[in-house]
Structure formats: C-alpha cells, structure tokens
Image (cartoon, rainbow, N blue to C red):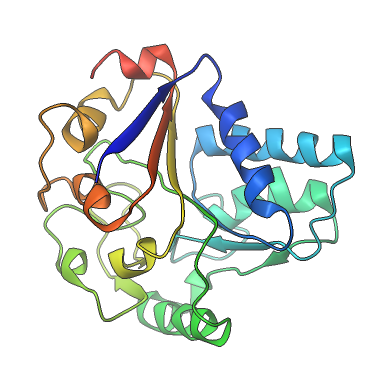
Length: 231
C-alpha cells in the first residue's frame, strides 16, 4: 500500500479536522501521545466547542500506554485528559488503558474491553513515530512485531526512554483502522520518517513504522515543511 504525504503549514489543524469528521455520529478514534498530537487535541476541542458538536457517543481509545498511573506525567492518558477530555467535560466515552496494573494484566484487560465492544473498526487511528522508527509501543526487533493473534500486547521492556514497561496495540489491531494518520511538526524525526515512508523505504522489523503500509489500506502522513525536509 502507498502512503499519502501531505505537507502543510499547520498539520495539527488538519489532524484536528480529521478528528472532527471521525468523531461525528459516534465514531471510534484512537489517540496517541506526544507534544504535536497534544496541539491537535486542543485544536479539536476548539473546533467542537465552536460548532457545539455533540460528542457524547464518540469513543476514544489509546494505541499504547506506559505502565504508570493516570496521574503520572509520563502517561498518555494524562496528556489527553488535560488537552482533550477535561476541556470537553462530560461527553465522550473514554477507554483508558490501565497501565498501572502492569504490561501483562493491562494488555489482557484492554484486549477484553476491545472484544466486549465488538472489536470496533476505528474511524481514525493516530499513530506516532519514534526517532528509532517505533510506532505505538512496537519497538525495533522485538517479538511483538510479529504478533497477529493478540489485539493488545505487553511490552516488558521499552526500546526507548522513558524505559518503563508498556502495553500496545498489535499490528493486527492497527490494521482495523479505516484511516491511519501520523503527524509531524519540526524536523527532529526526519531520518526515521525517511526510513519509514521515504522513496527508498522497505518493510523491515528494524523500522516498525515501515510495516504500517503493509497492514493498513489508508495511511496519511501530515507534516510541515521542516519535517518534510528530510525526505
């Protein structure tokens, strides 16, 4: 599958607009961590509030989480709660990964929650990219890359700081997204981006992000000119 690259002055605003479309009518949206997605979440809140959009039936999921409590500054949920859930107030249905229970129990519990929800096909799945090429918490060379019989996998050892255990969607679950979007501003991940979706990119377990186009039919990368400079 090919990857659609969109070079924009403000990729976070474009991502927020995609979130608005996916959240309508009870859509399922998968969130990711990171400073750039946080800006997109804040843009989403402003857009929703401007048009008084009802998000009471919208489901928000997480693609990965660190094994820390929800109040920990390293928690993806904490960031999303500050930028998205808190400002929205009562409304969306939030499916939090319970990272504080540990990678094995947390992964099993979230997998059970997905199955109880009917293993939804996500309208939009946001996926970050690490400087080592990892996506969600699927790290280079780890056995989790080949797992297809689990929806959520435990990650006892993170391949990148912060070095805390994690839980993560497997590629089997990532593949359930109707539209998969990554967004980048700044140029700090230019090398990883080039290895993941540049002209010479090939699927390899050394760059987990390069596997994404082989499992997803609709992949969009939103990036600003600085981030695009390394391609």
